[in-house]
Length: 171
Image (cartoon, rainbow, N blue to C red; front, side, top):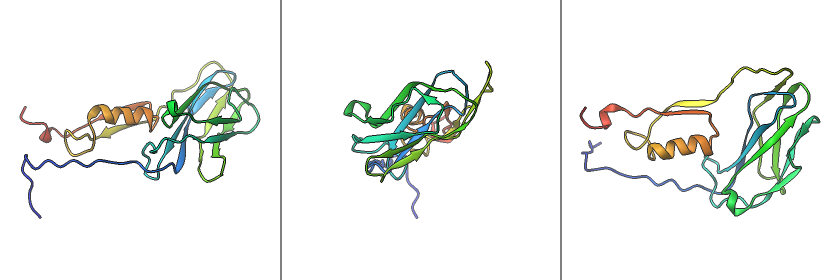
């Protein structure tokens, strides 16, 4: 064991692997007949955006009562492993999950439960990570990269970088 000096900064480059799963995210609560977004992110086995980006065709499955979502979708290079489907609508109350599978059936994913309610109002249910560290202290990546990952890969609604002040120099 040897204590590192301030000059002994090391960098770790994370290289994503091939596609291993689909991260499928929708709002936790929706109102019947009101459009919402469904996001699909292609990830490697460690929840990184896959590399190379997935370019295959996926099939989307859900029980009856869902509209605005294609039966299948082919990822293109411009998607960069992420696809958002706007205008998805559930027309009746219940709890739904949307499944995604690739053509070979090797890569799959299932959305969070989607509670569809009748009525004009809904409670706010938001997902987030309010304790992330960046390379400013003892984490990885810049604060901007932390926020980008939270928004674009983890599909979170809220994120906060909470680096340790002891790493940030004198106050």
